[in-house]
Length: 248
Image (cartoon, rainbow, N blue to C red; front, side, top):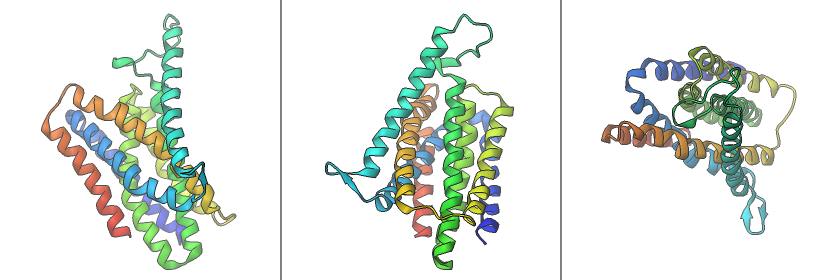
């Protein structure tokens, strides 16, 4: 049953990516919406789940929150290291040039790969929920399928934002769509401890917040500081709020 439901997530992810590439003439609106969706996923979905699942504290701070901060810092360090590597090899004709604003294509691919990893964990969570019971499985299925639209939208957008060509963006989108199906199928062979899942969600949430706040939203407002861009960001957060509310 979980694998069948994951096929719905597969289609929803592809639909999200298709939407992102069809509105390229309104790039600032796409980025504004993507930033809002990512912010909503982190603050309203990932982080509450992470704190609930990984309940242990370290020096008075929940483990999930420490990993959340760690994920933010790691995303920042990875971007800076890749940017520095790109600058030090700038004269090498075999190196891909950085895009406008100093963005490096490898950063986009790394971020998209993290999205794929998250979608894989979505599938695992879906399979684990159906192991617990049909009611739990249905609730998780609604949440996964609904927010996989945002995953597909963000995967395509963030890959393209860093200067990768359309073929690479579509490849990462397809990988993101297939990931929950593979994750759900894998639960036929093992059970994932809840604490490990919570720790992962905390770390991934921090990395996702960095990309949203430090990269996507500033880029959205760079050339088009319009109210419509801000409205798209608010709508993105609101959409995730609705998804979380209906799934709960």
